[in-house]
Image (cartoon, rainbow over all chains, first blue to last red; front, side, top):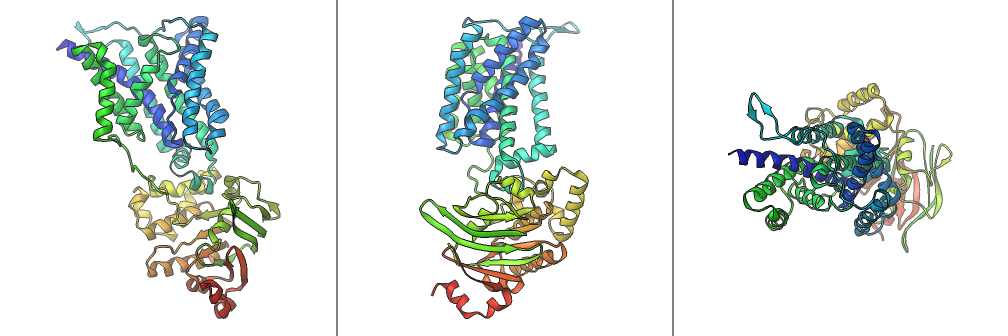
Length: 292
Length: 235
């Protein structure tokens, strides 16, 4: 029973990280119909920056804030300098460009920060704690990850749902031409969308790095899991990304715990294949084909 | 004053408009008539900046718009309701309306504008929290016009608002367009295939055929001009 609880909380913790990175993919897919394969590499880059800040300043929280801020900047820069210039061409071009960004970052980061595998400090302790003499099946770090991702998602939801900026972001994503005819600066909205997405990705990076350790390619598998989670949720739905991430995290945790941890990646592949055969539109997709 | 002078537009090798000129004052309804493919929609899309001309100009109070961005043209008060309305189905009725006013960044005025639009289209008010997806064709067209009014336009460009609507609704919308232009001191450019009903409410009319203006003048004289109907029907 205790093992089940531990596997469950571990599954939820890693699921929240997949959900965060999946949300980053979903935000960009929704607004630009681009699958951003560089999402993991961008998070890797911002996590390296965070590690450098933590080591120089000695403050974890300063590094945490810098990671999110550099995520915002990185997303905006990628959209402005690269994606915008090629977005009007064939739809495959930005996707290929995102692969290019992935390769670029994985090549450049070792030049700046060195290629060896590094540890990354967790925000709070990895070790379990006791409440009223009972061992809790989760650690403060698990709690922090859960609450951090949930709070970020709640803030983003509020931004999209209740503010004028959010209304313009949604309009720019759903119907860019109509939005422009109503005076919405669609280009600026796309930049903001990319910035927000890669900020969420940066959050996922600092949350997962203590577990995966930090190397230029250490988020590659996390991106695959996040992508699976996003597809589970329908690729179009932020709520779907959350539920997809949690389901995948739990499934992989049970597979790893009860069978073998070697099977986790195979498990993700299996889930993805079965899903694409049975319900290719995912579980939370809105209208699959829309015409304005 | 919104002035179109010598406008030519092509899609690749296909010339869609050739030397089209017309001007809109600060009020009244001008209708642009013509058969399918005559260039009516092209004309509207070029005025709002979605298409760029090969030659000629669009001027607003004297300033050339041909290099101004679509969103800035809208912010000058030139608001286009695209064919079919362009209602955003994934958003609520009220969010669609608010979107029309957001660029003004004036919350108090937005509330006033919402109240005004609710008065013009009382049917929309009880459904304001529903997704626009749930609206009928006529309601969507009303929402689209209401959303354009939220922007407090000086010029309202309507692309075939009668398309796909029941005859009774068409009459209703045309009367409304007439009323808006009078009451709100608004100039309307109405693109229509339904010539008879458009002429019945318009002050001026322009007839397009194969991308060229073949006739223009007061709507009343166009109704009686036999050659108009010939050009229109293509014989």
